[in-house]
Length: 134
Figure 1 (cartoon, rainbow, N blue to C red):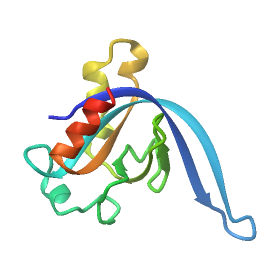
Figure 2: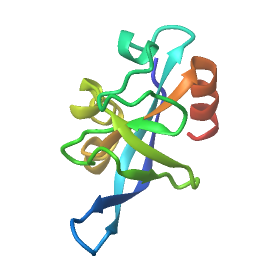
Figure 3: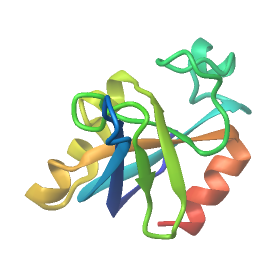
Figure 4: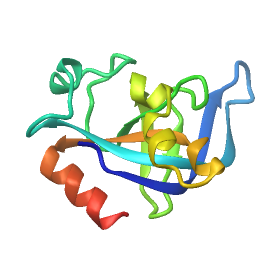
């Protein structure tokens, strides 16, 4: 079971430029449905998540999220309205096809929203966060 919330998400995309320019940041605000997934504690995770493996090869831990890499590049910093910053390191089919947004959106904008899947170590932590951030 994945709990969902629709929220306005601020994205900070940091890209490295070759040469002396260093890195630059771009801020975008998007409407997104935030869902949760976990590594331990019941159904809701696949074998890669249980092994803490992400699509980018990074070890999953608190502060990571799954995104559609065609819309939000890996390595982007996703800032939620509550001030939490997540690092985009993973993806999944339900995130890419926006299943949660399409199923539970009440308006056309909510149905077209991106899906961001916030990672938690345990199911209990995930459900506590989802219930406190409706």
